[in-house]
Amino acid sequence: MRVFFAIELDEAIKDYLYEIQKEVKSHCISGNFSFRENFHLTLRFIGEQNIQQVENLKQVLRDAAKTSEFELKLDKLGSFRKGNRSVMWVGLEKSLHLQQLYNNLENILVKNGYQIEERSYNPHITLAREVKIEDFNFLTEKTDIERLIIKVKSISLMESKRINNSLAYVPIERVELLYNI
Figure 1 (spheres, helix red, strand yellow):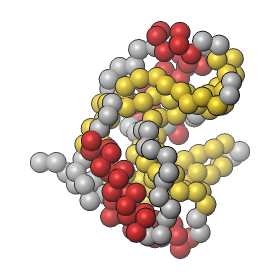
Figure 2 (figure 1 turned 90 degrees about the horizontal axis):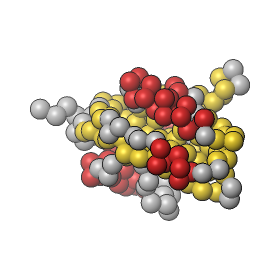
Figure 3 (figure 1 turned 30 degrees about the vertical axis):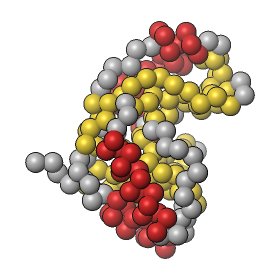
Figure 4 (figure 1 turned 120 degrees about the horizontal axis):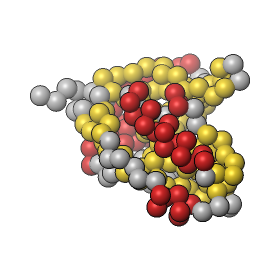
């Protein structure tokens, strides 16, 4: 099964991102737009794993979740360019707590035999892939992203799979973070 670690988003944040996505879509020539229910923040993509490996990753999840709840804020619209196509996303304000969670997860994964991630962590929520757009700069100037707060109370091990020919991200296991007093 194809798996990754993620922070799931609440319904209000998904609704807001869906509205931003509709605005983005109205300016695009084409693209593969994420389903509203699939909006999430990836912590670490793992890839194909067998049942035993997934069981081990559940323990990695439990170990990584030994941290306090925290908050994130939406920041700006951005893209990764690939030729004349882009991945469109909403970024997050820099967060020391998120970076520490990522670093801790990465260290636990390495101790469990996984390769260290070569790319630097660039937290974002993907709105669309393979986007063709004429004027990305105009879109970013026109689109204000509210600095909405994402309350991070848990992290999840997710499975990426097809359900009725549609891509779905399904939690395999979710672990609550430590409550802040």
